Amino acid sequence: MTRKHTPFLALILLAAAALPLAAGDLRFELGFGWTLAGPTMDSTYVNAYKPPFTPPDRYIDSAASQVLRLKAKTTYGMNGYFDVLFSENFGLQVLADYQRPRFGGSNDPYDVTLQFTAFEPETYAFTVEGPAPNGDMTQTTFSLNALARFRVADNLTLSVSGGPSLFHFEGQAGYVDYTAATLALVGEEYRLTAGTFHVITAFGPDTRYGMNAGVEAAFEAFRHIVLAFDLRYFGTGGVDLPLKLVEDEAITVPLEEIAAAIGLGDLRVNPSYFRAGLAIRFVF
Image (cartoon, rainbow, N blue to C red):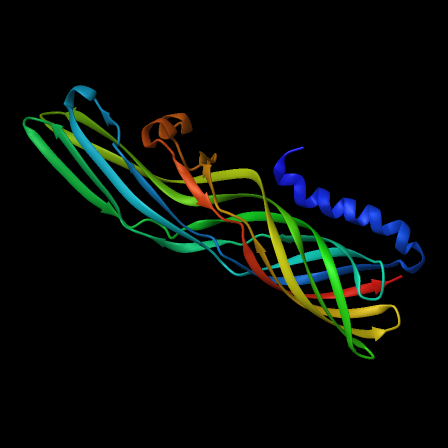
């Protein structure tokens, strides 16, 4: 058993010990809801490499650089949970969240410099204003929480809960630019052709452990139906994940060739987020 599973194991053992003692007072609740999630991911990726040049005997040097900034946008999601109350005030909660935030952000201009020999050494430089960042991250979070609830009015309760969380996520991010140049002798002059492609990358899937904590206000609309509103934070550390290229019919160059040329690196991914949730809960 690894250390990262210890929080889940501790809560499971606590529940197992408490169930026999509280069997006569057990109450179960099942809830479903809609959420507004504010991801914290804000990452920068630097694409710097030497664009390939054909024919190699005419090549002197080359350079290309680009800075891609990805920021996850606020998004809607959904959640579900199952509460087991040992008494009026204390219990355990199993919580699942799902959302798919899209990426925004900004791209610095993509700068390319090519040095080659035609009839004499030459330098050709250009800048491409590439498309804005795009992509998304699919994320599912599972939590096992200790729950404390207090009645503040006949039909109103306040709850606090928190515990370990498991984050499972993967995504796509674009665009990373790639250029290949070809020099050809046409008649009595050299003609340079430089083609630039905007490629999409992917990261994950990956799983991380963290924690969550939140507060909830619940209104008992009917005897067995409760309307609940909660605010919650899900936190974990960031992780550097290797990027890989995504197939695209618009890319006419083999992906293996592109990957070898640009040397894809890692993207810093942090699946932490804040969220507000509105749910309906059934008591039985």
